Image (spheres, rainbow, N blue to C red):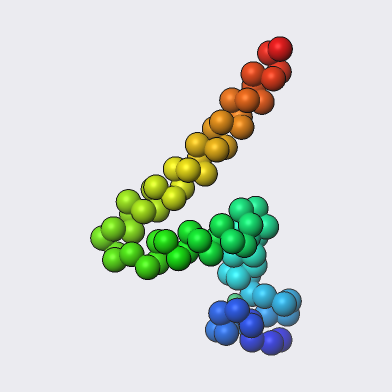
Length: 78
Ligand SMILES: [Zn+2]
């Protein structure tokens, strides 16, 4: 067992603990830069404004996914 190099709290047999592997998972989906950008934008806000910012940040991603799904279903029709 070693201490996780990212959070430096949990012990792990792997290179990262389970919590930090989730972060790496998000990085593999959204890219490292996008994850850092979201964290920067959200965590640098005061707490009462965070909810709005979270919604704003996620909305963009949700719209992209919706757009892609719509595009896919339209492609099937033609
Ligand atoms: Zn960790």
